[in-house]
Image (cartoon, rainbow, N blue to C red; front, side):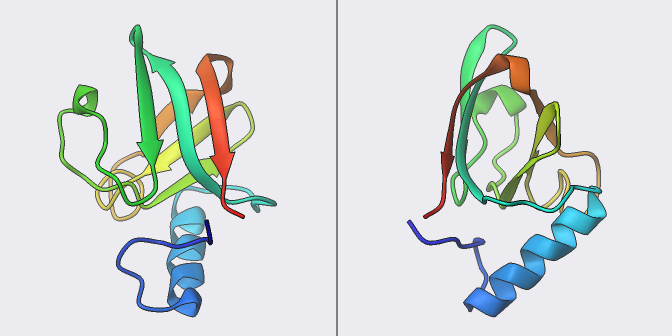
Length: 103
């Protein structure tokens, strides 16, 4: 699957939004773009996929905009968690089950 950011109207706009979010959360440069992340969170398997809603465990119906590899943690960003305000969702690398990348 080709890289995209939900609601971006062009590849250039997707890159711009992705870069803005990365700067906002102080994410390092990404050699690969993450499409889907699966990890154990509070005893449950959580799956976050770009363009899909967060799992119910997070008690909000926000769409996943971007996922960043930030060293020992992945940061999952939605419009309010990471992209505009508040902190992104953190997924410890030690709890990760699977990572899928864009082509």
